[in-house]
Amino acid sequence: MKKEELPQDESPLASMTRELMYVKDKEGKYTTDLSTGWDVKKNALDNAWDDINERIAAASLAVKKGEKSPIYYFMELRIMDFPVLSGYTGFWAFTIKRHMKPKVFESLSEKNWQYMQKHLISVLRN
Image (spheres, rainbow, N blue to C red):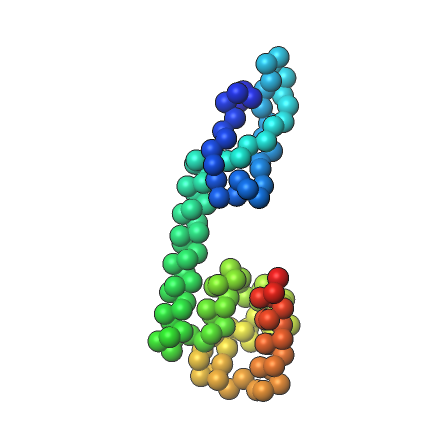
């Protein structure tokens, strides 16, 4: 791609970051330049965020219906999976999976509930 053809389309991340791209200068030599965005990439990111927001809405509905515990909603909201949530809380992944069931979640001991809250609040602050 020639330096003059480098896409500079506005993207949601344009104010925070720019992407380093390899381009050919006027002499035909490869060099680097910064791009603020590209429409194709912006559309792909928008689609990904739409999917994430749909998952969060579905998780919220599942919790309200009593099908899942609040941990499920929190995990979707923070775009985590079991290993990541396990790393933050110190609970094993299979323990977290068990507590996705509302009945099991309600039986969480006071000690474990306090421990989990402490670790999840630290995630919320970051």
